[in-house]
Length: 595
Image: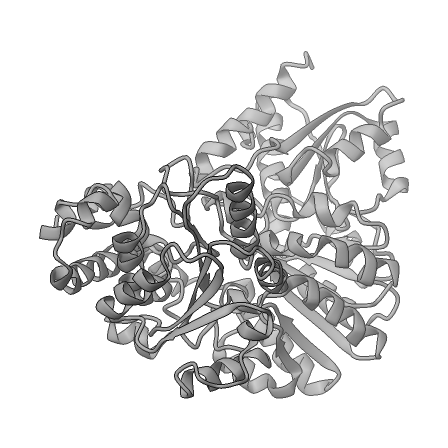
């Protein structure tokens, strides 16, 4: 371990380092971030840009007595190193032992689990209010930035903060970037503040009633220590606006700020170089669709990388692409307005972010039957931080009246659904984008479909959006699947046939928000057991609705999916075993029913 980092187990150890040596510590921290993230994956650019500011925070303030809250918290790696967790970044044998976000289960220095954005000012306001009510005396510091100012909740928090009348410090990290380049009108004002070194009369923070200070070089640790010493123990709310460089100290990250925002683990990067993805499939389709129809518009809420909206694609789209900033509620309402205006919006969003717009999905979108398309990426079970888990989308979208919720299993189904959804004018549509690319031919092979079944399995054309597909005809036992769980069902059906001589049916529920009642009634007459498979949390989900539908019949219903929990970085294979989400686990449970 590096010389200075080896000596730091807490901020108290940091304070013993002479200030003139802090730049050397910053170099060690920066190198540790680069070395570890390039192997394990994680947020590279944001953390490199905040090294000096974080060192200064812990050098000046007295955490955990003073409360430091990181917005988004993907800028917290230096904070973790200075609070007893350096080994997870500086020792290859311990890489990945801690989360990439703040987590109170790891340390008393982490106050909240934060992985989404724009909420830290609100959280800080609450902590400051509690401090004042309890007649306590400590600093409350919120670290804001890296795009989080574009979210509406940040402004709600700042508006409230101005009324506190007591100590409250917002460290606003202005690196001239969000996840992608900044988009939105507020950034012109920030640019003016930077050009005037904070002296412009046009100051959105002062307009909100907040005191304000500007630091030109937020990557100068001495300047940051001095600025924070001046505001420590202040008796009123203040914004300290610091100008930093995203990706600081790593030339590739400085030059490729968007690509360096979040990088995949080395093994994943190599695997993805040779594998097809739905991000690429969607780009190829939308390129043709948008060229043929200028009313089609792609929308994203400030996080384009994870959904495949590359800089090249965005440039090609021109006015047919809109980045609304990190504003999922606005993006859904914006799409609703576009649809009502006669154009054709397609909103790209990660599953864990879509839940931020639940009210807008219900009110502006579904209640008004606005024909917008929402593409949900990252849904299902993944080895990921709990703050980004995509296991609740079936619950949230499938229970909103008026939403048509489609879950394709194959590339052909996905493209047919997307094409139909964009052009239809009757309803809002959610499409759950699969992770693994599978073709119709792959499903037919897995299901051992005969020629007659292949002919009956018509392509999705939207004429009956509630109709489901019989993938594999059979009897006694039926698997009802959502999306790519059809593969799991086919493997479980094969195992049942081998072990028990039973030929189960496999049905693909293309629309998980409404039932193909005619098909379900046929199942009732010809089967004894129905097994539902859904890649999400069971409570409030698809399987429970199926069980309720068959509640007064003789059918037994077994539901497979996740418990009502958000697992934190648990390997996929491990929680598949926990949930019995394997052919062996499912078949053993079925055999336990005394076939």
